[in-house]
Length: 376
Image (cartoon, one colour):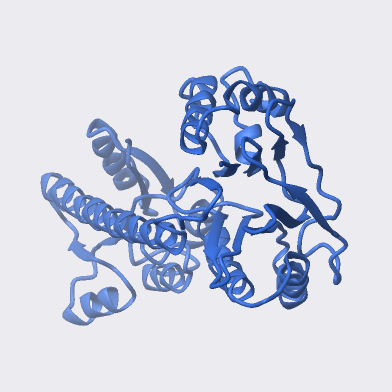
């Protein structure tokens, strides 16, 4: 990648000489003859990778320019090499105090100038690579922690098969699921999707998941769990401009009944054994939309062969290269074709179908799937 160097020099002959020599080395060169023009270039043009700066300039001296750049967070890290006739120890100390990384006095050898420029640019590249490596390492750790917040082993519940997976579009994301077996052998399960992507959504996801854990381990109903979640988070979600779609259900082992509440989450597919799958529409908006939850509690039965599938919109909105989406029709068709298989096989096959449909096209939304299937 071509490096950009800003030369700030009011002596036209020297400006042209330095510019010519640097262009021969493959650098992109910007030029300014005074302080205000130099600061305007840094502000309005592409930010240079390094600045060669004279001290004795009209309007502002080089020390003032360097100080102004240092005091601006956006430009504070641009390396500055002073290139000046002022050669006293006091001048050099003032130069370094103002933020310079090097100080060369005139007359100078162009070969030495090129060597110093190359050395300082290499130092910047090394620091950036180390910073990126550190960030990548920290993000990988964050992704690992986020995955570990979700169940690593699904509970064993009589009369039920389970499948669950969360596949973030980035290293970390805003989708999550939880499956908790209560002491009375009721199963509390949730899936949610925090609006937005990346680290901000992941941080909010952790807070919401913690609140859901508390609800799952209480005697609360799904409606009570999401109502409390909405009340506790409404103001924070509003302040941050975020929403959370959420689905929470309880499977009652003795009756095979599922009680659930759906706050704006999709897609939810119910497929009774031997019948066509149907979408269960959300009857209320996402959490954070209104101070009170509008979604009501619903019920369904999960007899042997019946299937309940909870998917985040990253699956139905998975895009192919031509812009087409996987969509609800394909999802329903797939569920119909796979419904007689074990929950694990259904989940794995659906993920593969979505991957094949996208044909390698980069996805920008997390994909989370939770399947409950009734068995004898």
